Image 1 (cartoon, helix red, strand yellow):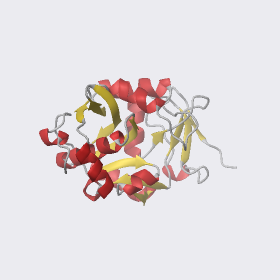
Image 2 (cartoon, helix red, strand yellow):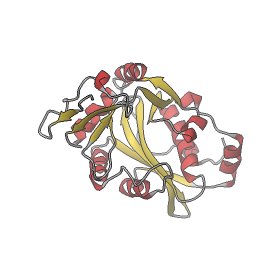
Image 3 (tube, rainbow, N blue to C red):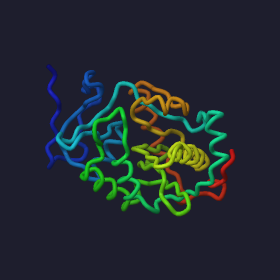
Image 4 (tube, rainbow, N blue to C red):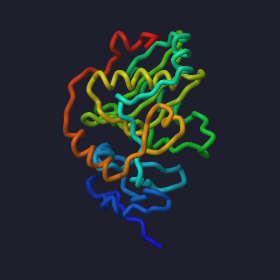
Length: 240
């Protein structure tokens, strides 16, 4: 049996093993331990690694052999969703309720998961990233009530999606569509979706080999963008 690489909590944020040391079962488990300091998380993302673990586990770091990504220009919006979008008049903001969005994502029911990976430790870590201007949220409002949203981390021309939630039917899907459109206008070229889900596949996300993914990161993360994290005027338009 292969041994999992252990990262001491006092080690350098750069202390990750080569990606080819990741286990094939469970797919992509690369290392355990370390901490969730902003520095370590950002180093991990640049290398194609992300944290994902439960409350009763040590910090687990993953680099799957196949990575689910969405190239914004390939976003697919089904006819039924387009019709739904015309019926709703949600309003959107960015970075106005980051902590609340993370809380809602943690509380969201997901039939394919037992509990949530967004532990209090994870919540605190991403709020720190948000304070440093590295993590961002999109909020979907209906008459002043937060009904959907998503959050993630931006590096260069890559947005690393973490989680989304919906308290009203389709709120998260509509938020996702508008946000992808916004990212495309700003010049982002790839959205990391981490792992395959049927829902993401319906939006046009595809799986690419880990080597291709890290190669893209090496290029896109070094290409800086300059923009303000706020919605363009046409971001709130219900029709596409």
